[in-house]
Length: 300
Image (cartoon, rainbow, N blue to C red; front, side, top):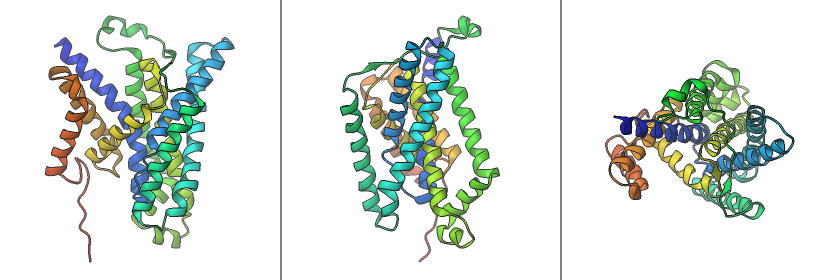
């Protein structure tokens, strides 16, 4: 039972991090039907930004709680700026081009950002300080859960609820929904479609940055390649849950996290990725739109 609980919480941690990245994928796809394959690199850049900021603040003698708060805020702002810039440079000029052109541009931007960080930093894994303090009330359960895991769960839930509120009850959220439904009609009723798309990239990049900071603090290390693997897994999770759906992105991420955790725990860790993608294939065979996705009939 203890081993099962350990695997369950481990899968919940993985799934929560995947969810913070998958939310960006699903928001961008819901608005412009584009898979932003550079999104994983935004997650990685957020983690590196937090590492640099935390290093500077540590030298200045700041305490751990203040460091992680300030580092997270700077990482979110910096990553959001990257997301905005990427949209303007790599995607906006190709908005009316064939989808293959935008897809190639997204992959090219992903490779560019990987190599940019590789040259600016190093190919080695760098240590990341454990900035999340241990909570005293968790001490009796320290064999099962760490404070960093609890923070990851709580932040993921808060981000999902915040995005749901943003999209359903705010003016920009209504504009997002209108743009996702029909960009031309949205522009005709006075919605600035370009602004809506930019805001979507900014918000998605911010959530990815939060995930990067949390997982780096939890694991205690990072390198330039963490964004590629996490980005692919998060994309799988978004498709699994039903891409375009915020609850679907979170549900798909949790399902993927638990699948990886239990299969690697009870079968073999050598086939972690195999199990994850096999599960995706099975879901798509029996439910192509994903767990919470809706199948759409195209009229001709």
